[in-house]
Length: 553
Figure (cartoon, rainbow, N blue to C red):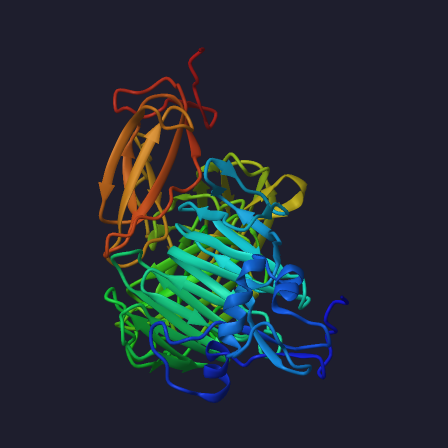
């Protein structure tokens, strides 16, 4: 007997409940959806037993086909009779999904997963605290599983007779972003289950998050319509359209849909960031209790390199290498629903870090027409750049020096007034780092008959950029590993006069703690040298011909 022909006159797919709900807007509850089915038009000579042997995974299931098709006499089938065959009864074969990308800890059981790996039906993909995975199902649906997630690929099959596929997953823990492929006409759309309920679609974009068996499920629809159906018996479902979201409780009931919060305004964010601790100051969104940010190298956000949440409109991200990135931000409401996304593209160029100025102190008052500017050395730097500006600012600097290979420079012939100066490092290959924070000093004319200045070298002064309310952890050590330290102190001002800790080379670093307790990363290790000189009874180095007398090692 010939195989059934796939033409509109020969067969059709029944519009089943799960699909019809989305198309027609009918109400539904737990367990209300009927099986998807294929409607076959009987040909001369067809028998249910013969069709069962040819089409069904279990040939004996022909009896169920008879019941589904309301046949009074299964042994006699009139030509043209419409037979309703549930899709689950048809012959099918496993068809693996594929792992498009994997970053950080991504595994299935004890096996680490890598981009390009096939994922068989029944595979459970897990991501660690730093893991991200992008999965493409056999029907073309793309899932982006975020950190600390667990995704069960419960169904991944091809239907031989229909030239179609069936895919379904269960999100047991974590968050997944979904771009569902459009379903074939009449076929059920993609379905994702959580411990609290089922979400069904026919081609759309949405996000799902579950806290596990004892928590809740949250869903946010970005495009199209998603059907939310709770596990609780008799619980009415919800059809949720784009720009809305809802929560399925731990008991399996679906809350009424609410509008998602508006996307944060990113138009004022700079396109170039030049500090190793990147700060994004967002305009507050009405109704937000938190903000979420994701940083990726690609516009599709398959390769996340950072993901942060903040109770304030400021997102702080540490540890990014220099490069070009995409930032995706959203506001979070009191129910934990994530709002509409805003995208911002930026470049980070924070390295080599600017050296740490040591003299003169910020806003110092000096006398005369010269100033000596000094800074700590940066081991990442091949040379340094320095700019000095007056009233016109750094758009028209008075001095613009590059290729400095030392850690101090003297500038002479300066008129009385207020000056600003800043430093930058240059690494190998003429890799120019960003400018550090500005410093200022004031030059005043020498008074008449001034007493000779007394220059002591018993201490070394440091100062740096700070924010109001910050405290600073300041460390000095003999090596750039800071193990052990020779000096360590918590400061409430961005400066310190450090008694000379000895002679030789020392390394210094610091990190800032914000008023809300957030601790930033350490700066790169920088060094300074204390000469082993002949000292006077007052403790200062003895000089000869303008240079200190150095003791032999």
